[in-house]
Each structure stands twice: as C-alpha cells, then as structure tokens.
Length: 248
Length: 380
Image 1 (cartoon, rainbow over the protein chains, first blue to last red):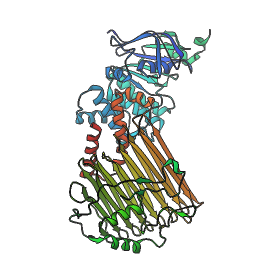
Image 2: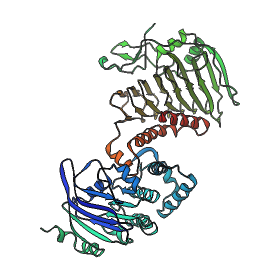
Image 3: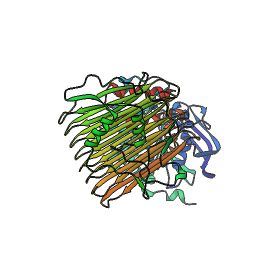
Image 4: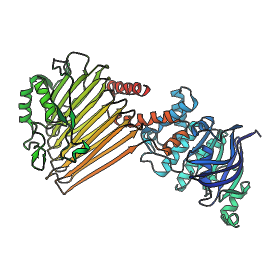
C-alpha cells in the first residue's frame, strides 16, 4: 500500500464564525474508497467543502495534506490542479457555456497543456456512453434546464474526463430515482475500478454504494468522527440508523 | 453645435435621474460621401440610391396606416413625430438629413427567400462615415442581412448608421449588426422596423468595439401575429459609454416581443439601458418579455437601467427579469473545483454572456470573424 493521498490531522473548521467540525483525523490512500455518513447537519458537506478549499469555510485548527503537500492554505483551483475533485450536491447553471466547452476549458486550464481535440472527443464519447448520455447533452449550456439526474450525470462526466486522484462526492445520489442512481453509479464504478481513483463518498443513503467496494466508513456526528470501521458499518447503519452514534 | 437628444423613453420619468434620453452635446463630423454599396445582389433583390427627402416620402407611404404618434408627457410633446419611428429618434434623422446623407433602398421582392445571407462590411476607414439604408422585405420574402461595422482607432471620429426596415405580410428578416469599431470612434446606430401581419423580425446586435456607442431600436408590431425578437450583447471597458434604447410597440393582436440583453462592464465604463415593451390598445393576447443579464467586473462602473412595460391593453402578458452583479463566490468555487482560477473564470463568464448571443448569428465566415474579434478583445 502506498503512502497517504489525503491526510487530515486534527482539523477544525466552520463557517461565519461557527465551528462545525472538531478535531477530524482522516487518512485516504490511493485508490481507496471511504464513505462518510451521518445524520442531517452532522457536518458532512462542511468537511467536503473544507477539503476542497471552499473559501466560505474557514479552517480554525489542524492541517490538510494532499500527496504529502500541505494544502491547508491553498485555493480550490490549486487543489483541483493537484488532482482533487468535488461533485456538487447542487451543481451550478452557467448559461452560454456548453458542457463540452466547460470540460475542455477545465482540462486545458488545470493541466496547463493544449488539448488534443480528437483524443478529447473520443474520451468524451466513451464517458458519455458509460453514463448513457445523449450526444446532444454536451452542446447544451452547463446544467441549464437539466433535470436533477442530468445534473448529477454531468458531474460524473466531469469526474471521468478530469480523471482526478481523489473525488469527493457530496450527496451525488440525493434526489435521484433508482435508474438514475444505477447509471451514475456505473460512472463512479468506472472511476474506482478501471482508473484506480480514490473516493470520499458523502451520503446518508446507501444505494450508491451497492456497486462499489468500500474500504472505510466514517460516521460523523455533531462535527466529530464518532466511529470508523469497514464496509460492515454501512450495513449496520442500514439496519439501525444513526441512533447508536448519536446517543450521548 | 446643436445639442441633440437620442434614445428617448416613451414616458418621461423624474429628470434628475437623467434617463429620459441621452443628450449629445457634440457629434463628430459627419461625412455623407458615397460608400461602398451592397455589391452583387442575388436575384429578386435590388438596390437604388435616393435622397433623404425621397426616403422620408417613401417611408411615409410604406408606413402602416396607424402612424406612430408623438410621445406625450402630460400634454407636451417631448419630440416631434417621425415619419417612421426608430430607436434613436427624430433628432438623429434630422442630423442625417441636415448632413446631406443619401439613402440606399434595398428591396426584396415578394416571395423571394434568400438562401444565403446578404453581408456588407461597413468600413469606416474611408471618406464617408454614414450608412443609411431602408430594407423593404416583400410579402412572404425571407432574408438575413449581416452588417459588420469596422474601423481602427481614430481621434474623435463618428460612425452614423441608420437602418429602417419595412416588413410586409409574412416577411421574415434577420438583421445582425456587429459593432467592432476602434477607440475614439463614436458610433450612432439607429434601427426602426414596421411589421405587418405574420411578419417576423429577428434583431441581433453585438457591441464589441472600444468607442462610445449610442444605439436604438424601435419595432412597430402593427399586424396580427407579428413577432420581434432582439438579442443584444455588449462589452464595456476603459471609459466607454454605452447607451441603448429599445422599444417594442405591440399594436396588433397576438403580437409577440422578446428582448434579451447580455452585458459585461469593466474598468470605468458606463452603460444606460432603456427598454420598453409598449402594449397598445388592441394588442389582445399579446406577449412581451424583456430580460437583462449584466456582469460587473469592476467597482467603478456606471449602471443605469430603465425597464418599462406600458399597458394600454388588459389582455396581455408582460414579463421583466434582470440579473445584475459580480461573479458570486459560489460560482467561482464551482469553477475553482475544476481547476479554473478567478481570472480564467471571469474570462469564461464574459465569453458565455457574449456567446449566448453570438450563437444566434448565422454560421459562416461572418460569425467566425466576430468570434475572433471577441477572442482578441478578451485577450487584451
């Protein structure tokens, strides 16, 4: 097993003066899949946003390392360029900018290299096939008029095209019907199994985990990691909910 | 030098706001010398030159029976009526007439549907700086007219453009104006259109140049089921002044007007936008929609927006929407999470606003030319 890809040490963070995360320790190695579960308001999305470098969230203590480098003070664009990615719970709409153009620009800018168009098109087609996306999607303005499921597919399409080292999936399955979850899961599975990508899956449902191999599961309660275990913890939460972890 | 007011709003408001119209203290010299014409025209299309007085007579005869009346505030007319209503208004016509401008009358015969756009480069490098045109689109005729306005940086130079379009029953016209003039060139660009039954006028305007701009459009939807669609994109930088006045006057039943303005302002640029949807009595079951998206990229820009919906008819539907502001942090974070830094994000967002309108320009060399100019402007 290689060294840690992401290492979070004693991390405390919050938003607008309120501390929402307390003394978080987390280590993710290359290719590992970690699941972050917890009741509503536990701080799951706060952790995702803090790791990705959302400026609305402030680190009040501890450090974040990625690939051995301290990224605590780095902006989100620099973290993305190093190989981090976050799939948004509510992806933003950008009128006038097509999905293809957005992905093309993101690859060009984050890699700093000119894009090979033919190769790009081929990869895009292949990724869209996995996600069962119609070819016309990429010409449409980014997320404008997209349904909830289409937006999440567009997020996973970006994941497959940007091919990061670590992807944080923030409630990617929320609001999706069974078929849409299955399709989106196929894309995530491709990223995990075929490309060896590491994942931090933030969820409070487990449908999205059905087709994934889970290495570690963390239960977040009131901004603290209450328990860490293996894939069996997911099954336990499925059966009994979060009650055991929320009891004082 | 005579002071002139252009881009009047159709109903006066508190004058201290200084949005009732744009007062032009001094206009650059007007040179009415003959300029290059439309060149070889397709079958069914003709062009001849007439005097300004003849043009006014022609327009008066061609104009619909219900003439645009004088705009009245209280009981005092604020400007005298034009023979044919335009956005910049009567005082601009006066300027052209006094300057001795000639008019080109381009006529498209009934039922002629042009498969290729008619393209004309309005090059302001030459001696003349006026392009005054009447477009007469015959019954059920269809045409796309592309005009690109070009000229390198100059000192206190003017560009005077007037386009009046008469659309007969069932006529369809797409008029594209791409303004790409250099610094120091003050652009006055006026458009007016009258639409009879089932006529359709699609107007696309892109202001990408570096000089001051005063542009106005008035569309008179006289006939039943006539429709007007205007899409405008502009980018203001440096100390540019951009002054736009659009009026859609819905007179006929089941008429439809849609106006979209996508703009970007940076540096010390200032923009005044007046846009009106005017439902006149009789415009039953008509629909009007106006929308502005403005991206602000500086702390020292001047913004005046005057959206107006006038209702002289009860059975109508009018919508107005506006988004004015800087790039929000959420958007920047979304971009950043894909590796796109603030500078590149701004560039993409500017491009997105312009592209929304550019994509409606017919494909081909004309569109490619505008795209390249836009790219250079963004690089700068």
